[in-house]
Amino acid sequence: MIFMLEQALAHPQGEPLATERSVDHWQALAATPGEGAAFLPPTRGTVYGTLLNHLDALAALGDQVHAAPYKAPPRAPILYIKPRNTVVGHRVPVVVPADAAELEMGATLGVVIGRTASRVAESEALACVAGYTVVNDISVPHASVYRPSMRFKCRDGFCPMGPAIVARKGVADPDALVISVTIDGQTVQRSSTAGLVRPVARLIADVTEFMTLFPGDVLTVGVAAGAPRARAGQTVTITIHGVGRLENTLVTEDSK
Amino acid sequence: MKRARVAYSGAIHDATEHPAGLRLADGRVLAEDAVVWLPPFEVGTVIALGLNYADHVKELSKELTVTAKDEPLAFLKSPGALIGHRGQTRRPADVTFMHYECELAVVIGRTAKNVKREDAMQVVAGYTVANDYAIRDYLENYYRPNLRVKNRDTCTVLGPWLVDAVDVPDPHDLALRTLVNGQVTQQGNTSDMVADIPALIEYLSSFMTLGAGDVILTGTPDGVVNVNAGDEVITEIDGIGRLVNTIVGDTLFGR
Image (cartoon, rainbow over all chains, first blue to last red):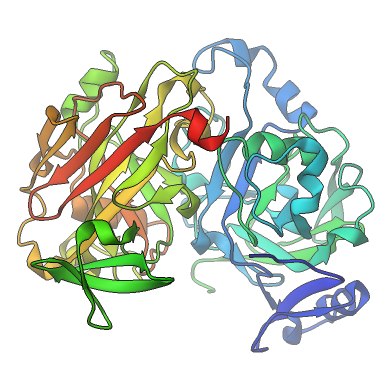
């Protein structure tokens, strides 16, 4: 099975199929004001999140990595799964559960797999990539990453993604992308994929040593330190230059 | 009814149990060893439970206690880790402790959100057997159990049959056991689950929408031992199925 792109793939709500158009086409449509520009997620594969893959996120844990319960710094990539109930598209409202005052916005780059990737060498890893997308890996804030409850990361709608998958050839260097987050128009975080423990190709190589990634699967590169929090009523926009601008509004359970 | 998915003669087929083995939907009757067995349904989200049998809790940690009042320890696996009945599971040459886990797998049949305990069994389509291997050597204390321990290729075995829920009068009274090379190494009964099936469905659906094809692996009792390349591991649940798996070494994979 192969999933390769020349331009960019997206699936506007109401359209029967995802289609491939230019990056500019999707960016213009996704930015159209009003109701008509919500999107479905651009892929339905399994979504894997990567934890503590930003040097600053690892540094934020400091000496805690040597103390209980962690006892040692991470060795292999730390991964988790965002199940299918979490995945939604651009401009789909995200419900803030009644038991959470605010949610953490985990802005990250999603690497979309194009060819089955098993035991891939670092030098060949990028050839398995179909393209890239913007992911908001939402969590209920939680301090411990020892054995977090699924309640923190697996709520319905907790993984907005899109608007489009931009073809690999359209992204010159996935390890040098600036990610910015705005809440109601105010910039609250700027990070970069330049400061990764495992850059994209290394991450793919280390993950596929024990676990095959399939076409359509998404592997995020992880969230930087200091993920901003947002409340119901606020609109969160994540921009990765050349990849996309993902916008979602948080709503209360009642308003859904 | 017992249903399977198998590969045979160049295609993937739905099949049902037959006295001679199995019967494909197109009428062909085949022996058990004439087909390649796949996981018995199209698998969606795979949710697994840790420490859901009181005796297994004691086995893994003397300090830990878990009761039905605690939040269940649930984690996720991906469909890519799954293989079917009579498959091969790889044991890396450099590990010292790789163990099976015999588990009752509960298959969800329809969309379920905020399901109350008393309604929970209505969303169950059926049951199958899971053998959820773990490699303890790779355990790290971040997002436990980390995927390198629990979500490895070939390390989640599912099948042989999806048994319709109506044919399982009491899923909370099923004897289960594991045999390694014919010797019983693990025995238990689903009556000993800390969080039972309605409790798990109520808990999970309170924060996430479950869908048809999602599956809950309900945990394992004590009696997990190391297995080695060449071992035949059979995980068996009375009335549900007898799931056969063989441990193989690195050389088959060119490692």
